[in-house]
Length: 91
Image (cartoon, rainbow, N blue to C red; front, side, top):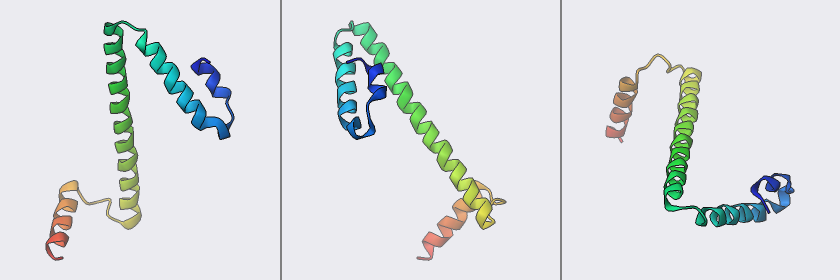
């Protein structure tokens, strides 16, 4: 089974599809020469980095929306840090 054909698998079988796709990827990876494996590793690390960046962007958007909603959008990052520090010190 090729990875592309996994896209048509019903939702209830997705766990099995994920396992199969991982097996297919590993099988193909094992056949590659070392230099190509290093390229694959570099690409996977790039994807991980991009995923982390996307999560931070989502968090930043959430935080900015919350600040606007609560009326704190005018505060700088430094002012927020000072308020948090003061509050932690009073606990």
